[in-house]
Length: 178
Image (cartoon, rainbow, N blue to C red; front, side):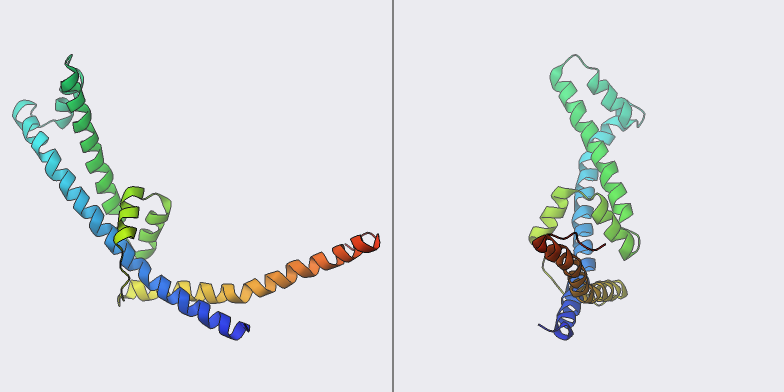
């Protein structure tokens, strides 16, 4: 296929793919927000106990549970501690998704919650997003794909042109040119 058509196809594929990135990020952020709200609701029950018996200190409640000689009580302390850490972790992730499209994509590439990412992907439905960030994302990926379509044939020629003299010299018993 001539490069003329290849770069056009690459541009279109890049544009369509790039336009979906902000939608996926928004779907991920919405799912993350739901998990954060549920974790906060669950933790609020323990916070109420901490308010009544430990002057509002959730850490004191957790410590009391973890120091108990009763294994059931210690196990509850571990659950409360995990829930508290989950709220903090999800809150940090939600804050990271408040930046620009580039910052959001950077977050998703650098260390998202993989279970949340997979759940978002399984339920993801492509759609047309007509926001400035989505259009910029689409154009950037489209241009990169089109440039890649132009670069690949040149790189292939470069790689194969360097190998031909070496292969020809090997077949004739001569040393390859340098």
